[in-house]
Length: 341
Image (cartoon, rainbow, N blue to C red; front, side, top):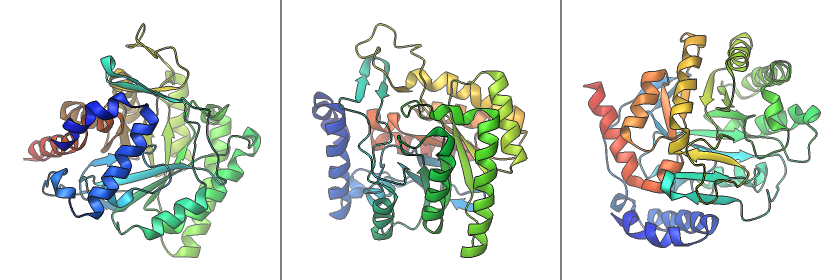
């Protein structure tokens, strides 16, 4: 109710400014003990996966809280897990503004943020201040000015830094907003990166006495041959999971709308079917060998259930949360609980 009242005001503001105001307001509400006014209490529907226990199957995707500044406030909304980032070794401002655009007629966003974040050290300081003790994913990437041939150095550094504090680590090689990043999804490049990260994961597991799963986040814009190559790489290197999918460079479903010509990744309702179809193909290729976290166009409970039916074990939201607010969380959790009965 409160979000439905606030949304018209937020949607009259610049999209990025509204994003910051909404998160700051959530933080203030949570700190004031008023989160129950926004969040609906739904009994837990626990999911065990990758050696972790999730209170429910619905998570928040990376990108909303890049620096881990709002973990407690977002966790109070009822998510079963929170993913923060993408974080890079060094702070970077991202791409010039404006870089976030709403397409309300299509319930969509286009962003070209460019991994804007305060760097891994600041993120870790925020994680340590948070009271949240649930499942926390940390999404890692490379700095924009790190040559693609040395990208593995950035990922290894971030992995080592966040490992003691993460429930799982997500490797983002699929954002369309960092130049050449998606080259890392190529068979040779991905194989080399996955091999190095799995070696580092093994070293860190021994050093810290705990195993932190490593998952790969992939793009929706992959043809069948590329997807098959990625599936083979995931299996060969024994990755622990895969997040499908990131935003798309396609403009299907938004052609002719204001801002549709802006560069960047498209998210929201127009991405739903392509993401779900890719999840289905990936589930067939992996044949249950490792779990899929489904994300992309989850705007309703029906969308979440479609992702699970296609082969995902967990789902995440981002743009749907922007458009529908905390109401979406309760709607999805009630539907998932009903499906279990």
